[in-house]
Image (tube, rainbow, N blue to C red; front, top):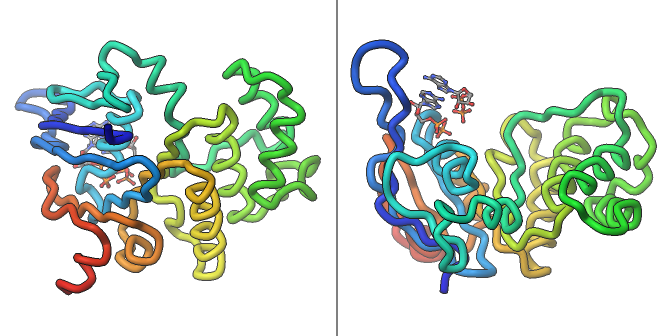
Length: 229
Ligand code: ADP
Ligand code: ADP
């Protein structure tokens, strides 16, 4: 069973006024095998965020199916929440919270036992242990992104979903974030990420799906895609 199986997924946003509403996904199907890093590559407005938000149960689909390890998430939103950690595109921390507080609060929300120990373990995993008690506002952009990843992993989800994890980040930081995603993957986490950088998809992903105008254009192992180009 693949970690994620998506079939004929359609999302039409409700119309703002008259008319049909925006068709953001028009029949998308793909599988993400367990243990892979799967990249959704496409330009702005292609439907990447809509796709992963629907997958994560944050956006209501119009039709089609989303299965997580064979379980239809229609009937098990809680299952999706337990199985998936989400790294949003926007960085949203209270500037006066510290990394350890951010993680302990998140651990509390998920009922994670030994919150303090788990939080410190995560800070070490994302190389932020020395910033445990610094105000979030004093962290660099890259540190904040690493904290976002730690926050998404607090309840040890087997699937990590990242929305444009390196948008607007410089080359050096991008490489650090790639390394971190690779480390989590090597510990068994299945990863889905969106990007509009071809290089990022090539370097990081085992498999790449290209999306444009709400449709998948290709979905291939990275090696095959690179050989074709
Ligand atoms: P991407 O992440 O690839 O940039 P999005 O999924 O954000 O693409 O957007 C896909 C399309 O759906 C775009 O045309 C966008 O304007 C539209 N869209 C996204 N969110 C909403 C929304 N909440 N309401 C209406 N239209 C939306
Ligand atoms: P992305 O960077 O993924 O393309 P956007 O910057 O287009 O996302 O959108 C940011 C937020 O605004 C998202 O939450 C998206 O759902 C929402 N949004 C995008 N397009 C529209 C739209 N046409 N109408 C309403 N909300 C939208």
